[in-house]
Image (cartoon, rainbow, N blue to C red; front, side):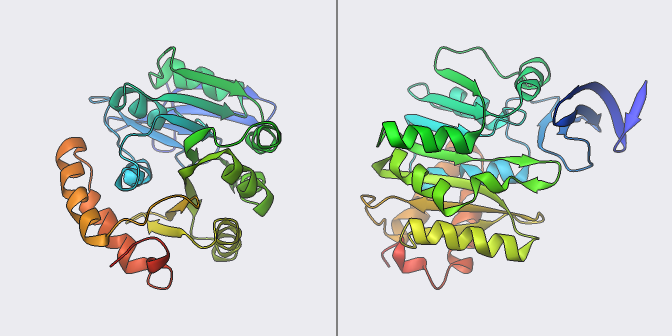
Length: 268
């Protein structure tokens, strides 16, 4: 029996990018890319529940789009978000672009990512896919989710102004983008935030993940109607009852951390 990162190493494979590891610690299964940083986590006793704080915060997107139907995801990880969306939204279809075939294999074998006719997974570079698709098609997706990290941090290919411009082209007129960012590298975060703001005309808000270094960014296309903040607060209470996620905390933290750009997204 092997131990790593203070837990039991239950599976390990190597590919051209390095190592992919699955570790169980105190009832939590985690995905690692050769470092202690957890890429995905899952409760062994309740594998369908969203466990990691950043994944729960990513679902703050439901405050703005509570019935996503056509989703593009860049980055799969353990597939916990993908699995959750498939379970919660029976009418949605999801296209995932994942760079590493081994990651897909592990998501299937150790994190319960299902085989589902509504889910298509493409192996390849997410940035190249967005660039290519944006030249051929427009306004396909009402939601784009970006969660592309490697062992060193956020992949630079999926944080450039060119990449976000391609994403905007692929969004429906009322569509939105959600991205998992790493806030501890302030210079990189500020550059990515600037790129995102320029492309989406500063119709963006950020949600810092409590007790973590992650910051979730939400960006909105031109046709999205500004919701009233009071109505969104009420919606947060309803969503909390439905999904048992901390939506009132999300909307509170969004207001507290976006004072300069708040009125670009909400009406009072």
